[in-house]
Image (cartoon, rainbow, N blue to C red; front, side, top):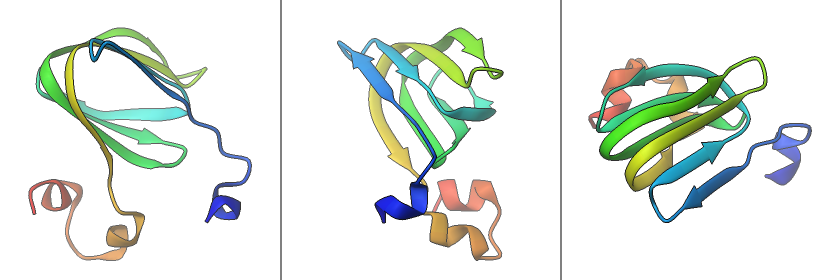
Length: 93
């Protein structure tokens, strides 16, 4: 499985559950104060929490910083992208 992601790079740095720095971000698909959906080099990443907001965004360098209380980080299953469901359908299964 590591070889499938060869050449792709991503780092997540979470400090005290209040500041999250992410590299390897390709796009911010959606966000609000409770949930962010990011397209990253390693797949779609969902961040859930409270009072979330973007502190820093630089898509040219693939960097995103999010402040707020982080409750969970999860990657969407890449195998499920081939199903007929849309992205929202995958989130609300």
